[in-house]
Length: 262
Image (cartoon, rainbow, N blue to C red):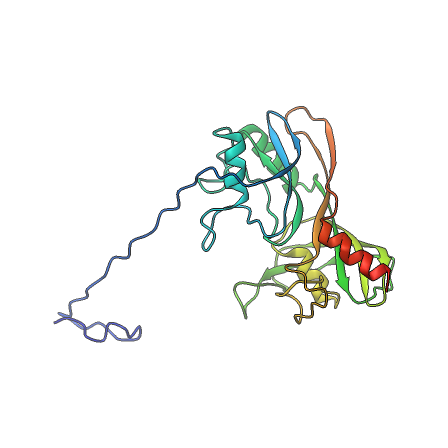
């Protein structure tokens, strides 16, 4: 007999029951070049370093099948990206959150990709961010060394957890305002949402972060005020030291000017 209560996941299958399975068509994501403006900070035969704009997703995924950084890079590099990252992540060595702006490295070939991945794994790539956080931090500088894992309450979020992966964040105060602090942040590890999780955990969430704060956003900015400001690393092929910087986005500078004039 056919199963009439097919919507009940708890229903036990009995002998001679007939189970009908409806095949669901899986949509294939076609990775294609798209003409999306990019701010290229550095480019040679092996790598590209882009100043990613806020709101741009790095690679295609559920909910973002195209319109990503990968689609834009493909339009520039054609078929010269590293394939190590997978079919939907060609050239992607590391990532930035959708609403985090700033420097990101893309590998054009497998050799460059392998060496850059090694440098990141061995903490040889110096990643420096600028962030505006809520609250006035008294310390001039400090280190947050707290492991991070996926939240058990919300699988879309990350959280500080004893059984998490090692995560180390160093911060230094650059400027204090009435109720905010501008920080220079250097991360040793690259855990998902690391800076946002750490700063929220110690009570100073990143301004505009609607995931790891209570939603206060007096400046009306979309997305967190977090910018990948500087990268220092060895060129994966030549071995030369590259020190690259990306200026703060205009909206970020405007918020700082408002705070300075209060």
